[in-house]
Length: 287
Image (cartoon, rainbow, N blue to C red):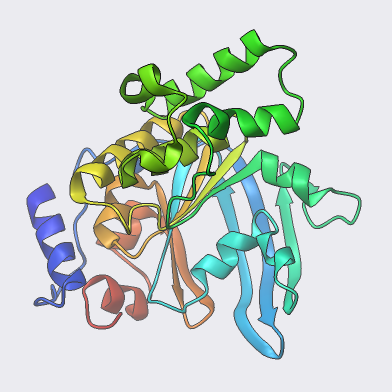
């Protein structure tokens, strides 16, 4: 069943013959496991860039201790919505967000809430790895240092080590922490960026197509890491790969033309979608 699923998905994603029935998820897929309580709740969220509306009235409940995947064709609004969750759209002068977004019941758009502190709680990993032009050690140490999370060099070194271990990178870089981070491979750089996010003790990690620039081996390592991290964090990913969404997520949201078409357990989305647009997308009829 697993082989059939990914053969169908990979065929659809590469322009091959689309399946004619809902895709079946592998029986041991992670998304069959229970998720945690609701971490982020959004109600009627709309995003505007100047006079253009990019997102229309999106309402979702995102669980903790799980991976939630946003899928949909390019330009459908999934990345715009992801950036709402840590107020990254605030950095775009013409962007405007309407609606309600709450994390643990707290309004993250409250004027009294410092966006910088919010982004320490809601980390972001981008499509292209963006290590600082510093050493491997300094990349991970940067956040704890500026947020005053450690009291001395020993504590800082311990935090760096633990963050690199949790990101699955320590064994590969332990003997060259002073080396330039830009000298790492693409997959290593992406895990370094994840370690950098983990180092400030976030509650949520957002990932915007974190594997799109990586080779299959590096992608597999990042996906394994996601599965480990979800035991401690709320993970939200944007991905163009339906096979990846099926492999790593417990919940999946399908976006189309700025609208949230469907949001459900990943197994339900791929086995028995309610909306014909969802079925057409996952079977490769458009996208």
